Length: 57
Image (tube, rainbow, N blue to C red):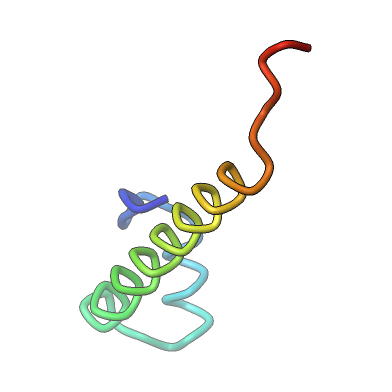
């Protein structure tokens, strides 16, 4: 998710629906994806610590 760029359809939906230029979209899309990626990573790590997979099954 963090590596998404101008070849991502979500980027173009965000750009066109928001009425933004490509430069404006990149300046807002990139930090948004970084935050989403980091939050997803933190949640994944936290849940893996709280609910570890049982290897004996």
